[in-house]
Amino acid sequence: MTLPTKAGEKPQFDDSQEEVYFLKQVAGQGVGIYLCKMKADGSEKTEVKELWRDPNYPIDTQDCTTWMDVCAKTHQIAVTVTYAGSDLTGLWTMNMDGSGLRRIITPEHTTNGLQSVGSVTWTPDGQWLVYGESIRGAGRNGRVAKCDAKGEKRVYLTDGPFDSYPRVSPDGKQVAFIHWIIKGDVHDRWLWLVDLDGSNSHPLPNPTAKPNWSAQAHWGLFPAWSPDGRRVFIIGVGLEVIDALTGREVFHHSPTLQGSQYGITGWPHWGKQGFVGFSVGGILFTDAELREAKWIGSSRLVECSGPKEPGRW
Image 1 (cartoon, rainbow, N blue to C red):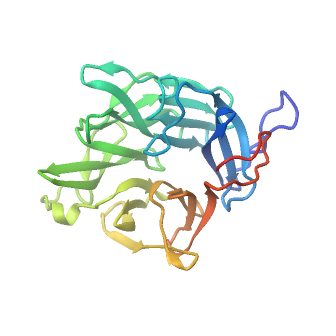
Image 2 (cartoon, rainbow, N blue to C red; image 1 turned 180 degrees about the vertical axis):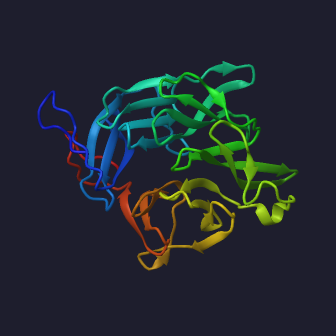
C-alpha cells in the first residue's frame, strides 16, 4: 500500500509485493498506539496512523494481548485486544490506511466472567471473521466462533471447552485450531480441523481412523496455513510443518539466526516468501524451509518514516 500524499486521495495497492502490518505502542508524553507497516525484508518501516491516544489503560504487552489479520481482497484489517482497559478490548476492524476504525465486538460480562476475544482470522472473501473466545481468568477455556464483518451473525464453530488459535484455510473452507486434551496434569495440544459451517470437527490426519492419540497428536500452538493450503505450520518443540491432508510431519527445523538456532515463538503468518511472527524482542522472518531467520523489527529504537518521533518497534 502506498499512502496518499494529498488529503482526500485514496491509497494505492500493489499485489506484487508483500508487506507486514503490526501495532506499535509508544510511551512517553502519553501513550500512543499506532498501526504500522514495513516491507517483508524489514525496510521502509512506516507509522500508518495513530489508532489510540492515551487510552484508559495501555495494551498489556506481556501476554497474548493483540492479534491482527489482513484481508487482501477487501483491504481490511481485523485486530483483537485481549488484555487492556475496557476502552480497547474486543474485536476491531479498519481499513489498511487506519481509517474507519470501529469496534464490532465489545466483551460482555457473563455469568462465568468477562468475555475475551482472542486470535482472529479473515475468510479470504472478507465475509467472515473467525476468532477464539474465552472467559478471562478461567484457565484454559475457549471455543472457536465466527461473525460477519459487522460483528453480527455470530456462530460457534466448536463447543470447546478447550479450543483456541483458529486460522482459516486459503480456500476458506476449513479452520485449523488447537484442541486441548486435559487428562489430570497432562495438557496436550493437538491440531484439529473444522469446516467453516462448524461441521466435521476432527483431529489430523484421518477423521475415520481408529483413535490413536499418541500418533495423531501434534503438540503445539499457533497454526498457520501455507498459501497453497497444503501444509500447516505449528509451533511446538521447535518449528514443525505438517501435511494438511495426511497429518504427517513434512519437516521440523530450527532456523539459524546469526550463527545460532532461533525461532518464531508466536503469532506466525505464512506468506509467499516465508514465515513472519513474534519472537522474543521483536518480529522475526524465516524462509519457507525454516533454514535461515532474520530480524525485521525489534524492540530497540529505530528510525521511522512516519510523522511521529522514533519509537519502539
